[in-house]
Length: 138
Image (tube, rainbow, N blue to C red; front, side, top):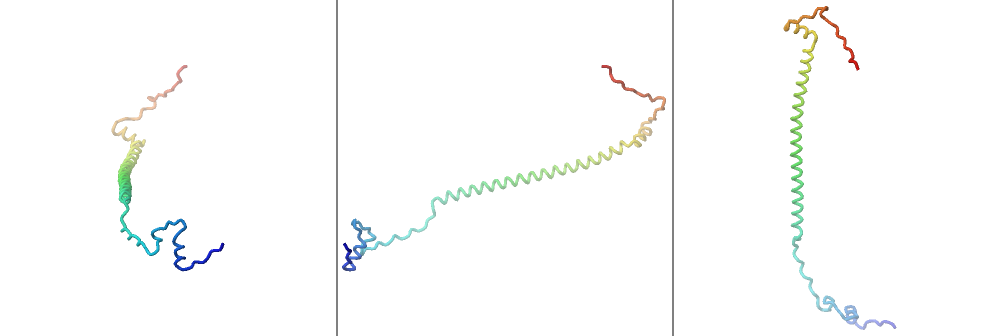
């Protein structure tokens, strides 16, 4: 069996547009063209508002955390500076007290104060007694 060529142009076009099962789409019908619907105007997606709100809340939370952290950091720095000032003052006072103690404990000064102010005199050698410490009996 050989396929015979179409007899006319109309017959060829008809065969092309009609499938064997007989059902034809409206857009495939000859002579009728359906205009496509006009494009709908673009509208913002409905999910945009919740997304924007979520992003805003996240940004607000991160900003609050940043400000809170910086505030605490500044407070800790101020307390550290105050503590360092107090430490410096105490260290200077300690150096002064150590110098004063070294001056007051000098043997020459102790002897001068004992003889001059208090009227103490060194004991004569016969008044000095040697003390011997013995171990306690078991």
